[in-house]
Length: 215
Image 1 (cartoon, rainbow, N blue to C red):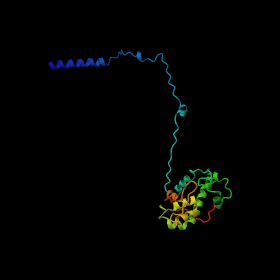
Image 2: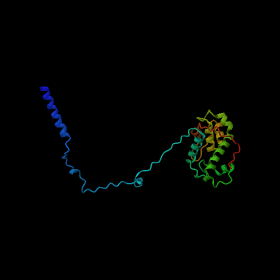
Image 3: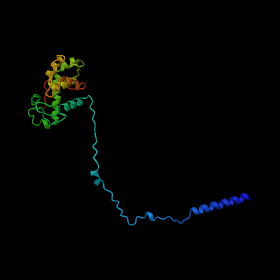
Image 4: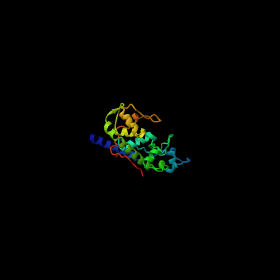
């Protein structure tokens, strides 16, 4: 009997609690959250309006040319002129690879006036001149490649770069004198420096040509 009375009492308490929990009357005061009398301006700037405020992002690309022929000529062109096709130095040498007018005429250029504005001709002139130097120095390339001359390990690309700087004849003198007969241009660049700086590039596909012509 006592258990039954206890159970009834518990049910009555639960009923009261549940009933008060679903009371529909809500006395919460929302007046503090009123927006009455406030100036509400939510204008959002457009993408076009924001554009001048955002710093432009310029993508960066790094092209790794390694020891390829393209890497060789680009490295040499950068050393000669920082890759500027349109430059003429104080001594009259022109373009990316710094050719003299006499050298260009030797390779078939009859009119050099447009040379600075024709990048295709400049690249063709470089290949032609390099192939000529390779023909002149063919025996020296075969004899000295892999050996150390004047404290520098000799490679074919180093020889060709040095010939571009000093001429094939001066490179022959340097190699055959064991580095005793050197050469330096007006800026102080030497055969030894070019042999070292441009060592190990792949110039094997350049065909030696005694009389190259650029049309």
